[in-house]
Amino acid sequence: MKTDRSSFEIFKSNVCHQVKEQGELEFIKKTILSNEVQKLYEKKWYPESLYLVAMVDYLCRKNSIPQYGGYNKLRQCKLNDIIYPSSILTLYLLSKDENVLEESYNKSIPEFKKFNIVESEVENIA
Image (cartoon, rainbow, N blue to C red; front, side, top):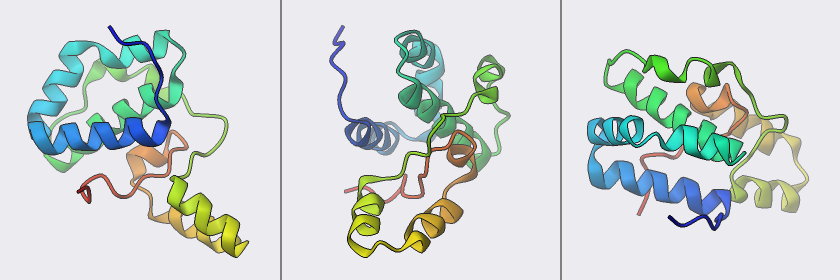
C-alpha cells in the first residue's frame, strides 16, 4: 500500500476522476466498502478523510440516497482552517481582494463547506 501523501489538490483531482470513471453510485459503494475514510483518518490525514465524507454525502444527496450512517462521528468534525482551491488562492494573492475568497466560499458545495473545504468543481474535470 502506498503511503506517500500527495498534495491535497492532487488528491481532490484523483477523487473527482474516480467519480467520473466509476460513476457516482459505484464510487459511493467502493468508498464505503474500502474503509478508505477511516484509513485516512487514522493516518491523521484529516482533509483527505473529510473530503471523501463530503464527496459521498454530496453524491448521496444528488442521487436521493440516505447518508451512510458510518460517517456520523466524522460529520461532527471540522478543519481548523478553511482550505481553498489553489486557483482561488492564487487569484486572491494576485488581486488582494477579500471578495475572491468570500465568493468562492459562498459558492462552495454545502457538504464540503461544513468541513471548511471550499469545493465547487467536482463535475468539471478534464
